[in-house]
Length: 361
Image: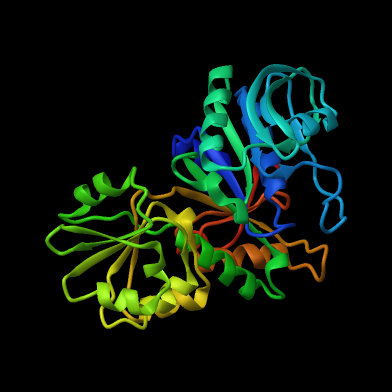
């Protein structure tokens, strides 16, 4: 089985977003693992974060956090306050003019191996700018640290591939953790629109600012008010047997699904990409049972899952059993524990977790 780095290189991803499903899911550990692996290839890295990462102590839980490590020649984009908090020798290449909560975002280059703190862009547009600046500086691969509640980094407008991190903090058993990881992974892997109307829909909505719109089976588009998505009577008036698909320009939430399930006609739902979807397992299951479906304009490449069996807030889980459970729930996606050196792809040819090269020596 390929390593996580090999999976990413095979996908030809140059910008990778590492998304954690919650705090203490091992997101930063996975990012450091990839940074080290890319470094061994002699690849100059660029790093940034949506939000703040790499600080010694979590501001909410007051628990220690893993640091973010850089090597000489790595580039990183971070806010002024975070730049000053870093321990790695570095020099500023550019003042970006982008303001964040911790000051202006700075583009810097590491002069030595050491630890840094990242506090980067906060919006998808700023993240796209950050990627361009890192590439222009000379970064050949870019890693973006982004929690799941700040999932804009996973948008295909920003990154080429996503690594999803989940762990024991999500539930008391390996089965419950695997179910939660699988649910979010399934949302990220939703298919792109297809069929005769797909080109028109892509052209109409890729740059659209419509909050909501209906496309009938003939291809005609009717703009709806944003309130129509959460007001049952408006939806009932708008939907009929000719409704082909419903465009949701913002976030797709449980509330919208609940309203749609009360209507006589259920259109196919279309969103820009899966980072706009915020659905509970219950709402997603109810939609499927009713015959509904969700499609995206642009799909996301989910390259791998990383697991963290440690839970600083409660009981930890067995690392091998956790990898096994997640792999069984997601047979098509490679699963890794980068600390224990375990990897697994469920299927007939991979019955047991595989040791990484460092553990087989």
